Amino acid sequence: MEVDDFETKTNHFLSWLRFQGVVLSPKMALVDLRSSGRGRGVVATGDFESDELIFSVPRSAVLNLNTGFFDSSSVSNIEFKIRNLASWLALTAIILGESRRPDSKWAPYLAILPRQLHNLTFWSDAELSELQASKVVSKIGKSGAEEFFSRCLAPLGLTDYNIEECHKVASIIMSYAFDIPEENTTVDEKSGDEGEDLVSDDEEDEKILLSMIPLADMLNADAERNNARLCCGNKDLEMRSIKNIAAGEEIFNDYGQLPRSDLLRRYGYVSETYAPHDVTEIITQEMLSLFLSKEAFQGLNLSPLSQGQLDSRVELAEREGIFDDSYDLSHPGPERPSIPDELLALIYLILLDDQSLKALCDSDGLPSRSKLCTEVVGQVLVTVIQLREKEYATSLEEDETLLSTGNLPHRIAMAVQVRLGEKAVLRAAISEAITFTGSNKRMRLGGKNDLVGEGKGKRSIEEPTGPKKKGRFR
Image 1 (cartoon, rainbow, N blue to C red):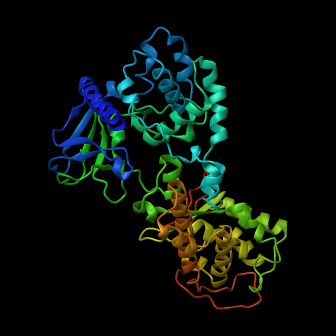
Image 2 (cartoon, rainbow, N blue to C red):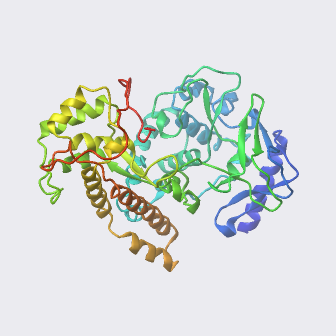
């Protein structure tokens, strides 16, 4: 019965797509992938060449603020209120409203959206605890979303909805929605100011619509096998191949360079293909407190700072645009080191002796990365990173053993993969830090060493007009 219902809904949805003017290539099919735990997916039934149309969706068949239920007189009085909400809240309200309309144009589409979600919003406290010291738990934002639901959706007068349903709809939007440019617009104006950053980032040169695009959101994502891309023209939205696709291959979209922690938070699954993008956060205030302690760096001949000394170094870091609330460690690659330049520079400033600090304050910028990589900076980083790793209840090796058993519950297995990936990043950062051999001459240490390493000059840094992003030095 369940299989028949699944297939019936799929067939009804495909008929609805054609009725709405969606053009489907005869060389693609929407298939049942539940045997591999992935719901539906799009597969090539014939060969596609690069830049070939897979399907196109007219804008009238895209669910967003412009195509929702505002043509109904029974709800037209709330249109103004909805249009002043943040885009994700507005779209949540629209889907809630459409799901209650017996004559909704969108019913066949809404019927195939998932009923069970594995986003972190729906995890129990016990399940979340399996993520251990991962900072992704602090990004779930469940209570903040509930405040928005109560404050912004309740006054709309929608019937028979509850907070749990709001979470489900908002999570579907976070997992499935696309940001598309509005037709024939080039002016940037956000649709609202209530928690806009929870879902969507707007481009500066065009008005963006957060939209549900039927069929486009049926594509699964894969960082390595990505072979299709959504193209947003003024008339129709087109899914086109970006490489040759052989018959029988699945057609994949891509979420970009997301760590598995964010993949789990937003989309409710993890994939090894996103492991190279894993990150581990170092919280700045937690790290700074170590430099006030006598015990943190024992054995490094490093005296603790007074609060005033620390504040003056932080002030300089803010002036140079390298101070941030947190820093992401990552796997090293051709275009980035494991330890971001800003974190490296902050620790360098903290470790400078007073004379060198004053000289730097009067200079035109920070030294090159090679001069920031002093031996003691590397030693301090190793200590900081090791302390971060100790925040996790299990070791990397213990997690590998757990996964090798292959009998963990689904959510627990995903949590272990996320925390294991973060520990692997910490190990990579330690391996990088122990290679630092630059001179400690200007550091707050007893010994005086000759300067070594590359980089004779200084990199000029203009006075920043705002905070810089992490890891952007080149």
